[in-house]
Amino acid sequence: MTKHPILLLSLGSALLLGGCMGTENRGLESVHQPVVSRANYALDLGTAGGTLAQGEARRLAGWMTTMRVGYGDRVAIDDPAGQAPMARAEIADVVAGYGLLLSPDTPVTQAPVSPGAIRIVVTRMRADVPGCPDWSRDASIDIASHTSSNYGCAMNRNLAAMVARPEDLVRGSGDTETYDPASSFKAIDVYRRAVPTGANNALRSETTGGK
Image (cartoon, rainbow, N blue to C red; front, side):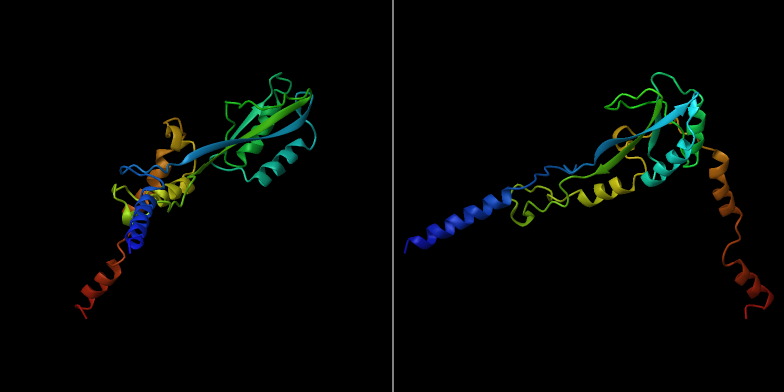
């Protein structure tokens, strides 16, 4: 007769212990935050007489197309010996075709650049929220009144997926970007000058006496 209360007590302790396990969110600031990772991709191009060798510009364009280089990526030139000063302009023209400018900061790569070559380095950052979704904690029996273990996963994962430049999640966006105020004003000016959608119906009602 004494086995049942002991069994129930053991089950109750296990349930309480299970509710206390899992990710702890002790406040309104989610523990699941975006993590930004960085990867460098390099391509060595041949040079001849200080410029790119024949066909190398086309090879660079094909590589960048395969890489799907776009906004958010950084493209830099690694030419420590300065053997191809005129090749920079050729590379800049190819990079400009993808809407980018050459970055002045060249990341450190593992292997040295071979003589007679110039290295193009594409730096790409990616943002993700590890550990999401997270249903490790049972909020229905959480005696500590913690926020859900999955709290913040949806919002921060959407933010990580939508941000155009993941590095902005780390250090924000500075005021060094080039922009044209006149271009941004065009859309506002068109909106202000647009005729209201109901204007034609209003004029028609006045001319027909409201019929």
